[in-house]
Image: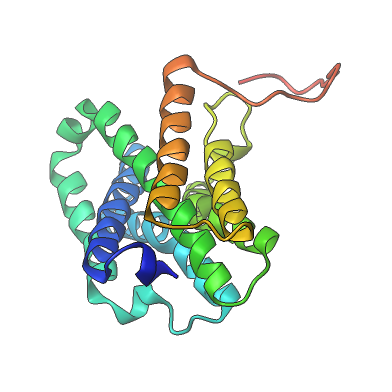
Length: 218
C-alpha cells in the first residue's frame, strides 16, 4: 500500500526529514537537561526512531527499518552534532523546528497507520499504531529525561490530537477503499495544520469536568 501511495525514494526522503527534525527536538531537550554528548545522542536517536521501532516490533516487521537502513541510524547522529555545536543558533529557530516537527507528525501518523494495515491489523489497531508512530519517540524522550510526557500535560498545546485525526482519516479512507496519494496527503496535511493551529492559538485538551484536584499547577 505504501509503495502505491509514494515512490520508495520520496518516502525514504520524507522519512529522513521527519527523523532529522524529531532528533533535533530530542537533542535540544538533552542540552537543556545538561546531558553529555552521549546523552544527547541517545535522546536524539530515541526521539527520532522510538515510534517506528515500537510499531515495527508490534506488527512483526523485523528487523525494524531503523536497523536495516543505515541512514535511519546516522541521521539522528547528524542532528546530535548540529545541536552539540550550534544549539544556541538552533534554539533561535525553534519556531521553524516546531513547524517541521508538525510536518513529521502528519507524515508519520499516515505512514504508521498504512504500514500497520499492510501487516494485517484492523482499522482501529492500525490507527492506534499510526498515533504511536507519530508520538512514541517523544514519549520515550520525556521519560528518559525524567519529565512528564508532553502529550499527557494539560498545559501543552495539542500534539496527540492532530495525530489521532490524521490516523483516523487514513483508517476511514482504508475502510471505504479510497486511500490514494491525494487522500493520504490530505490526512497528513490536516494533522499538520491542526498542530500548527494548536501552537498558534494554544489549543489544549479539556481537563476533568468539575475538577477538584489538590495538586498544585505548574
